[in-house]
Image (cartoon, rainbow, N blue to C red; front, side, top):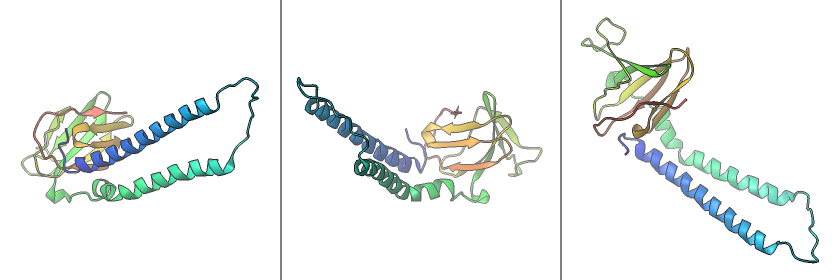
Length: 183
């Protein structure tokens, strides 16, 4: 279930890639069957080894490259919205997120609405966020590379020791959802 504002954009791109790969898979399988029948072993016919067909090799390299470039351009708007257009901290619910072996630590601002003060609220493996408000995560790692993953929110971001990496989403539904480490 998609529970974030940009989830439908990610799903649309995913299904487009799935359609392209499914089409290519079936085309390759059909061509394989045609070639199996057309070039099967026959009495009196000697097999010929043909070394490289440069035109064909160029074609089957250029077509996937063109598809990849088109996909990159097609999803560029979504990428910019998700990975570059972060909400301002004053307009977002800010949460410090820190991964360590087998757990995620979350730190929320307390009554003073500022992180890094004595009244901050901390939880382990429980992220509580408001609906219809942008959530800005400041993701860190205490030990090794982790990958913060909220499947229903279509959010996945690596946490690297020594770096603070921002990520954001805007929940549109309430519920209880899994938090995973995909690394």
